Length: 580
Image 1 (cartoon, one colour):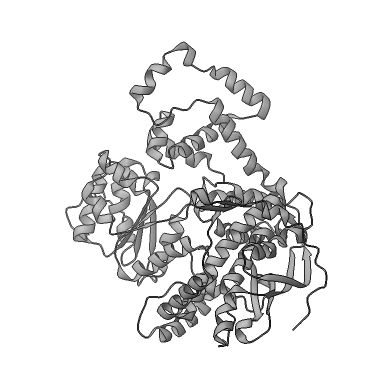
Image 2 (tube, rainbow, N blue to C red):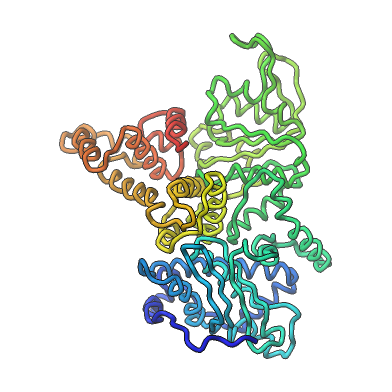
């Protein structure tokens, strides 16, 4: 076993200790902003044993590795907040081992380190002494043929990935559970491992069903996951996420995909509903057939029925030829109805008929056609609220609500931010011919602390802009992502300056609008914005639209009401103002 370095210049652990607060009067323990708990090690070992007995060691390892990755990402956010600008990258990465020690996980001792944030280099070799995950093996005197520190390797991967701005995989090449005196660990970027799937399979693997012969299923699942990167490269969906919350969504998709049942994807704008709809199609029995998507909000109400069901020649003025609708184009495949809440009531009735009978008619035709189509719908609105308001048919709601899947916003799955950043940096680096070495700590701290109201779409736009601004052979720094930070600050200032009506009723708000003392001086406001920030008309309109959508919680109808425009006008403006 290699010897650890005799001297390790770790930063003062006092800063971390000061972040740990006990408040027994309220039954709370906090590490920074993260609530913690104390738990008996024996109970944790019992949980581990139950998982292995119920699901098999493969799935148990996948669950614990992902939980560790999530925990490491959250601790990295605390470490990044303590990191002084310009301080050595080693001081930042050393916070992970210190947090491990502070939490009673293991004592880390460094063997070697090759770190250069400007070049994106991160190779660490170290030892874990007194690892808590090996405790059960040591006490029982039974040894394993494979490493057992699943939570710890997941934690270290998550912590290092979040700090470096690129995916770092940690591998245990020796373990006390295997009979070694200490655990021997190596960490380096996923791209530098010859076989990264060894670790990635546990970060991406779905949880298996409980079946009596789970070991046979476990072997099949290992073979399937080993081939997964090659399968995904041939597909069209881009699904990135390792967090337990995101994997729960993927697991639901895996459940419903082979059934043919109608699925309803729910979530805020930008969470990836379209990509997940395509993933559902790709994992269904219809994968070899067409995937046809339509954004219901982008089609004028007068043309919606023709778009969905097709039109016969002469059905209306300008219909000079017969044309198939989306249902016919998607025959034997999948039809994805995005923004389903905006579907006109007349089209809702015809859609209900298709769902109930499998039949529809082209406009201008009296002949029924059969539709063998799987329906996936999506919305960022409160669909039941639309039913109560009379904008959406209750019977259609229940036909669509067969298998709802709620997709969490990015702020609730922050542990996915490092892997999403790595994904987008790689994509846009290739697109714009840049060589980018991860992110500087200050930039990473900013991206982790931002609430991401625009979710994954916003993160993608921020990183695309950052790559364009970046220099070759350098990491992205704070100046490259400052546009997002400035936008956030500008929104806050504009929310203060421009008095946008709240969600109170018009009757409550109307009297105030007629009082001279309540009427703001809009000319002075605009003049000040132009003088201090050089705000253009397009920027002002974009800011007001974004503020209204945020205030409405992503509900487009409510946002349109706040702005005093129709929902269609709002959709048009958002499309026109969206970054190209």
